[in-house]
Figure 1: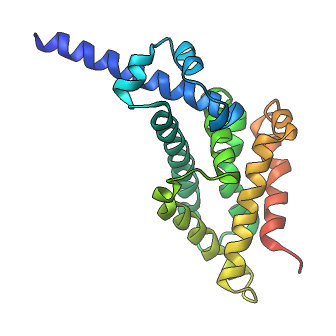
Figure 2 (figure 1 turned 180 degrees about the vertical axis):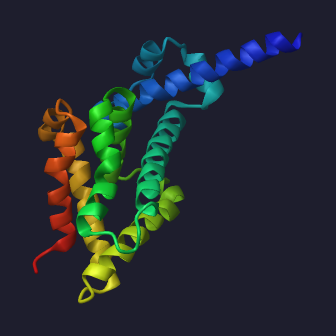
Length: 207
């Protein structure tokens, strides 16, 4: 077989794989893993059942890859935002960085929003195997705790990590609740202006 034909087949296969992942993400975001069917995924992706078997092996494996992809994408974005903060960052700046991946996804809509809602569902009801990304969760928490510790010296590391987890839980709920749908119609600047003080308040706690 000529090299150009091999390349075309490889490109077509990658497009099919990407389309299956995108369709799975959208359905996972709407219903969670228990509500997703192979038929709907293949119909939405314009693919056949054999393509799922070829690229992933099974429906569960496809969903697992989609969930892992969504989590990794979200965590990488959050880690980048937190990495960019100076050690002297304010609580508002920390809250802004922590929430920005969600704000950006709400504003972008489409696949970005599907990824966000998948992350939120997984955060509330973790599937088997999500421990593979435990290191990235820990990295994001550690970066947030580092800045919180400078503002809240009276709180120990365990309490600060608890506040970070609560703030993450609040964002997960917001992505799935009706208010998240309402926020998705607002400009990103307005969403950020409303949301950042709430997340900062969760970090700050009672003073």
